[in-house]
Image (cartoon, rainbow, N blue to C red; front, side):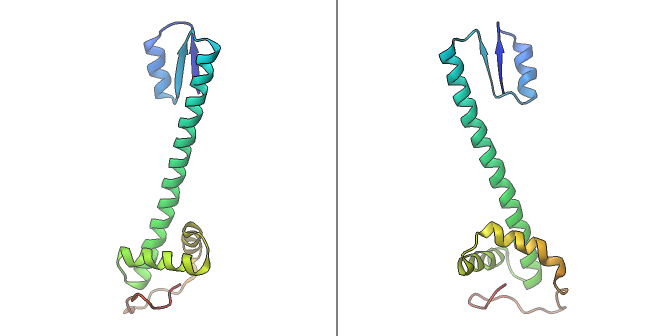
Length: 124
């Protein structure tokens, strides 16, 4: 969102910034306006991509936590379970993590004394 102002208004700009404005122009010509639009679109795309990355990371972390609990493994080993399964199956890591989140409630409870995962063992 870009605000086009006919003059400087610091109070308005501050309030607009609090409400999510990306830029403002005061009495600009068409070229300045187009440049501002280009910058805003680029920043919005960056923001959107970053937001998506954070969301994907949260899903992967949750799935890793489930695997850590189920297999009594460290966080690194939990991630390795996800990564190795992703590589073996040719599916994206995020898709594997989503599958773990979607199905973990269907699995039997963890036995009282589970064997720990060791690298090289079949997983998932």
